[in-house]
Structure formats: structure tokens, C-alpha cells
Image 1 (cartoon, rainbow, N blue to C red):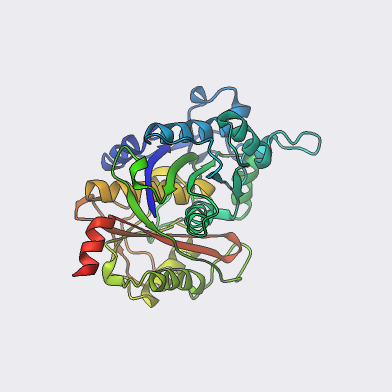
Image 2: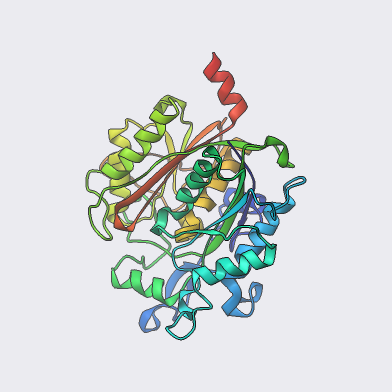
Length: 375
């Protein structure tokens, strides 16, 4: 199963390559925004400049369409209108600020209809809205649908924009940091919100890409059923998602070159991740979080971070985990403290979210990996 034609649209750039270069330069989209929170509180968030998406009501649909169009430009002789093509949209809330009981035009279903109409799709897009694992879950679903012969090609696009509903909701949970977030750090105080989009093509056909694709090994989704907003204190859900993913593909921890963690910078999430990775004996594997660059982009996070993982493989570079200064979890993770040149062939991507959901998958340089496996 191949994955490629990747794209990211964020405050750090409008392509995967531009975003990756911004990370290498240590740029962050997180800035102080005045009076944006509940009761006009100043908050550190990562937000698109309004000038890029006007009118405001159309921002969500626009970034989805633009991201898919950029992905299509990276393909060869690929017709998105075919019957065997599916688009999957991953998002938590979409344009929820504009949704009311009298007007449903801003619902996720209507956004999907807009995408269908714009590209003249044969199939209505599949919407995945499962908290913060939505992006990783979308990639796993794409692989599963192709493996089961329901579709031949799937475009996954993840997007979320900052809304009062989400922003104020996290404030009510006292989960918003009063400065740029610091994943896995001893002084972490919570998340910084972000907005962005990412898209990729998943297919069995290697010839559809202008640039050599990578390989995706679909993983598992689990639920620890611990709490509506708090993760398992034993890391059980994440442990099971990763363990089952490795077993499915006959991988061991020694095959993993890098872990792209969830790393929200909340007290409980980062601690949970350290416990899960300790149980899996993965504490020595280089790990980062990208949340201090992008903020937490919710339904787009898993896709954005997967695309950066793909860029790490393509460029053989590990990205510094921004915001980290001092070990802040019970189990000492091998946090990437500076950009590093390293051969990267196999990346484990994880995600966790509200309601106890967790997900994992593997992205790899398939030719190098297959040669290693044969040996």
C-alpha cells in the first residue's frame, strides 16, 4: 500500500516541502492573539491569516479543497472522478461556529457535499470525526478499504480551524497553556490550539505519483474507556494500538527509527505516552511532538504529523521537539532536542484523544525496508 503526493497547508506554509523547511528553521506558527479567548482572554494559538481565506465562513471548505488540489498536482494520470476513488475527510468540528438549528449549511456533511460538487466525485466523501485520532484513523481506514477491494484509491484530507466552541471548551477544562505549549517538558501547562490541513493519496498503484511514494502499514484503533477527557493512567489503549500494529506487520521495536508522538503538552497525555512507550520498551527510540510548531490541530493533527514523518524519511532528518527543555515525564523518553541528520526508513505514528481513543500506524521507505527484511 503506497502513500504519497503529500501536502500541508498551515500558517508555516502551503506545501509539505515549505512546512518541513519551516520546521528545520525552528519557525512556529504559535503567536499571542489578543482577546481571542473566552471573556476576551489573550491566548497563544497558531492561526491562518484571515487574508488567505475570505470570506471567513468559507475558510474550512477552502483549505480542504486547496489541499486536495495540491495533492492532485503531485499525481500522474489520476482521475479523482473515477468510481473507484474515495475521499475521506477527517475533522473534529469543521465550521461549527456557523452552525445553528436553523441553518445546517456549515455542517461537516455540507462541507463534504461542497467537496463532492467541486471535484464532481462519483462517491460521497466519508467523514471521520473521532476526536484527535481522526487523521491517523483516516489513513488506517483508507488502507483497510483498499485492502478489502472496496476502492482502489483513497485521498485522505484532514482539516480543522479554530472556533469559539473548541477554544472556549478547552479553556473550561483548564487545558490551555498561558504560553506556547511545551510537549513532554517538566514545565508544560497545557495545549496551544492550531489550525491547518493536510492531504495524501493512498493507493496500490505505485505509478500514480510524480515523486517516489512511501509505504503505509495500516495499524489499529483502540479505546481504553478511561474517561471522557482523560487518558488511561496505565497507557493501556495506546499500548494495545501500537502492540497490535507491530504484531500485524511482524515488526519489532528495533525496526522503528523514529516515533512521531501525539505530545499535546497536557500533564496527563504526555505522562500516559511515556508509560505506554516504557511498557513497549521503546524509550530509547527518538521521539518528537510537533504541537509546539503547529499547535494542536485536532482532526488534522494526525495527517499533518504523518506528512512531516514522510518528509523526514525523504530527507533523512529528524525534527527537534520544540518547547522541550527538561524531562517532564516519569519515564525518560528519548526526546529529539535538535535537528538531526539520520537515515530514517521506518516511522511509528501515534495519536490519542478524548473518550479514550488511540491509534497507530507505520510509514516506511518500503524498498529499503523490504531489502532489510529479506536479509
